Image 1 (tube, rainbow, N blue to C red):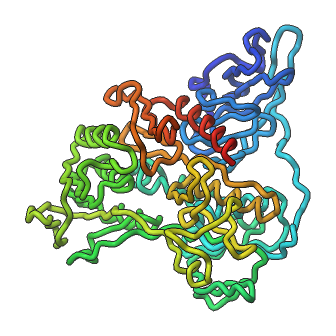
Image 2 (cartoon, one colour; image 1 turned 180 degrees about the vertical axis):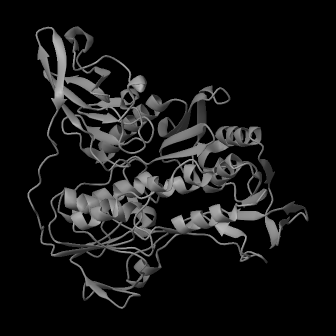
Image 3 (cartoon, helix red, strand yellow; image 1 turned 135 degrees about the horizontal axis):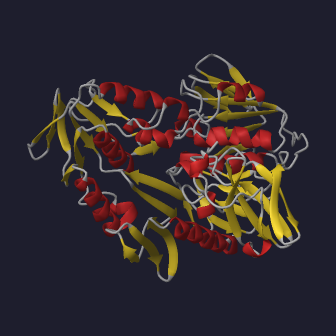
Length: 510
């Protein structure tokens, strides 16, 4: 519960003038010490909790779109009528409140019962669903199957020894030491029991028997399925230079990786990050938060240029340099030694800790061995189904037909993976909803967050509105006259509006 001193706006239990809430408008206030949002939709008044259930974003600063509200921080979407979390990254619903107009005043009278739409138990011809992968896509799919009323057997097989957790935090606040351990699990352990999700951790699937409709695991068990979701994610690219396997060399993909790195930082003073990628630079920021000296080595001329273009690349570099990071660009490591990284130029960089962040590859071997179509990812149709009926793929491994670009694309973003998992779950239950999502990701560098919507593998030109150095800018990536993607700094509402605009274009194209 928020502290009273932190609450903004009027006491909604005492009421507000009805004239203060126009059609399509919203008022932020509080009731019994909790922040509440009141909206008017036609003749109906709606009230929900004003704090996003993902990271606590202020929904009053977000975007109202039809009967939904979208979080300004990470673009979670909620129903104003039911509070339901309609789109990841939020998984938990908002509390709802009773609200009515009494004469010339609007009054919130108290909490309402949970309004989430009741789903009758369904089987959709499925006695058993198996999900391979306990990351963003797999976990979101398991939750959505139960939310949609699926009542059959549901097994979630994860190679990770930990229950599903908040992977984006591993390179950000958790690594920086500002996020406590209890922030990391996505759900408490009892949640999976309550939802009758058979979560099996620390086990790998070794084979998919398509003919017998079952998967085999390293634990020696066979799990039959009527529907199967492959959500095996990505694996980090490894260095192949001398010393790459020394104990002070780390990769960051799993919770175990992050914990091992945090342990290694004890007593360390100097770090070298190999790779000027998103993960590499987020790690650099987190290590600077722990007062380590940090050098970043990267092959590119400027960081992140391939994804964000030269303007944002130069800006991100300047932000890191302002915080003391030293860049060695246009360079690759030749060898790693105890206490040092040797560059191809011969320069030696002292290093108590080395973190490698040079990219990831989709984990498609299992799919390939099962005879699924693979081309830089597992090929799926608009419903995320592979060429074998009943077998779906989602998240980092899925290459799906994008209605906006007219091409098949594969995207390695957390929110995309979660929404893929939710969509695949609904389509297993015969909802037949095509994938028209607009990719979104965010990247955090100290007190600077970049929000990116859309997908632009190439572009004709980039238009910058505002000032990146003032941390108030919109960067638009154009192909001809068409907007392909929009990145913002300090303009959360602009980012949300851009996503809605791109979603409209996707709908027209599909």
